[in-house]
Length: 213
Image 1: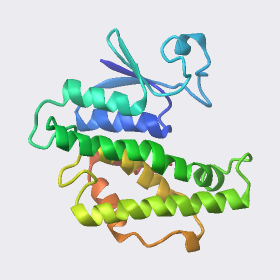
Image 2: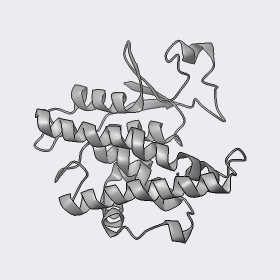
Image 3: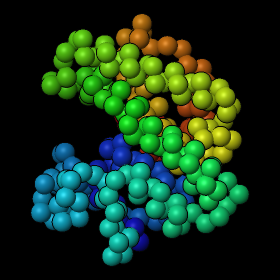
Image 4: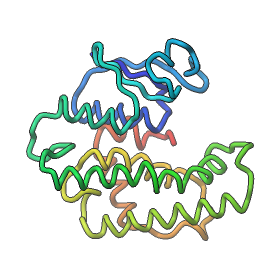
């Protein structure tokens, strides 16, 4: 049985939980992180010296970094379905990786300040100019996603649902859950349709579009 270390509200833990649902994998989960057992605890640091969630234990195999974890799960347990989460074809897989890496770098960095200020009400994120700059950057990258979804008419990497949609779908949930200034929130009809399309998946309803941002 897989063991996932990390609190269920963490966006990166939720990537792993959603992937487990998609692959029909049983798992147990332990609460670690803010509000629970501290990741600075020696027992946790022995598993991940970065003191970050999630951590996966699969028997005696230990892995950290959420995108690495979900890639591992798809490789180890995904089989060779017609539309796999992580295609074996090099070009199809590279497209999935491209959008996963984009989410982890460009998209995530853009929304960090605005999300912490407006959704989490963080006292350390009260600078109005920084909030506006982050909101504008976030809108810019969501515009890139909008165009991509218009082009595919379906999912981020193409016609089939993949790991890229798990990573990006959770960021899309944050976009709609964050009370951005209306002047800084463009209309994104393809993203909105994508959001509803993802909500048809039980794993997203349970761990993505579930009232948690």
